[in-house]
Image 1 (cartoon, rainbow, N blue to C red):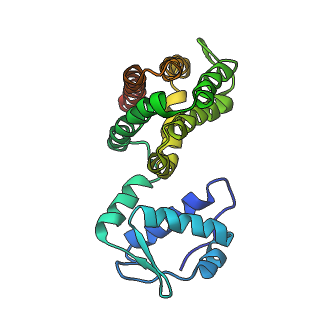
Image 2: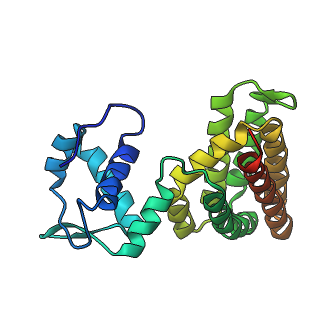
Length: 239
């Protein structure tokens, strides 16, 4: 039923897309039971751990349900539609970006405010240190090290969520990681955007360090709005 996939850095993503493709073409329909993890691992020529990660992603999207002792089943149409929308090959689309930032503005703006009043001093200082560290890789003229800038951007937003002290917020961000990675790459490729993000992060971190929840939330909102506008502009501009 499933074809082996090439070994690369997106094995889980390819499995997710492979299962969604089978659903879209009608080979798998609502109520069907998938092969076991072991059989899927053999079919895709990957480890069972990789298969398990892909299945968890699809369960989180509402595409699959795991019934212990019975198996893995295709779930309702709404979850399938959501899965296809989020895991299409060209995932960075205007409607997807707008939806993502709608969630980010709600979640990360609140998290910035929570971090300002809840995080211990060491965590607040870590946020400032992360910003200072990435300045060694990015200049106002552009990127000196794209990979380091991307990792530092992810590290900053992850550290901020942790500093918020809300574990549910952390879980939600984990579920958004793949979309965030795609948008981050799109954003950092825009001339000047990486440097602007560093300045934004610095303002956010300083407000959190000062314990100013209102200023931290406002700075985060301004940052996310700026990134959203830049990414949407790059997607809608003529080639």
